[in-house]
Amino acid sequence: MSERATETPERLPGLTLVSYEGKPFRFDPGALCLELVVTGGPGAFARYEMLDEPADLVAWAERSRLPAGLDLAVTGDEVEQARALRDALVLLAADRAHGRPLPPRHLAVVNAAAARPPLVPRVEPDGTRHWAPGATGTQLLSTVARDAIDLFTGPYADRVRECGAHDCYLLFVDTSRPGRRRWCAMEHCGNREKVRAHRARTSATGKRRATPG
Image (cartoon, rainbow, N blue to C red; front, side):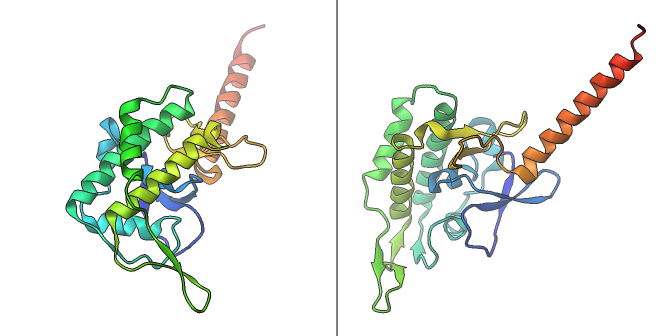
């Protein structure tokens, strides 16, 4: 949430974000539900709000890891529901990342969204996969909520992480084989923290050398 998202033509998993310094970097949170989390959030994260109108939710779906070709119509009420689901996911993912209990009131938001019909895939005569036409924002949110349930109850539930940088709160699921991912992106926070640690070591070394024996 400390960054803003921008559109990208790539269909690779993840999103292209732009840092405070205006530098783009690739961030893959590892799950569809965590891609929604980067659009804003409750409390201090509200200033990063990206879901102001129906077109914003449609644009997010097009940038997400969902397969392309979604014929989506979104209402204003569904945008409000998207923000409510997103806010609950922000808090739940943070609780999961830090080993805290998951509050029932936030789980209720996810469960209510998941109880509605999801997006419907279909196979065409040529063997390609498409979405059934006339998809709604409610179906999109149900699909996102079901993805969150799969994440929070599945084999990677204990691998939900918050970026290890001191000033970044991006959330991701560590799907790496060794399970040692620390940063939202190595090219962003990973490199920044390496530089920061190097400067701290250099400063400490300089102070020791300057101390009289």
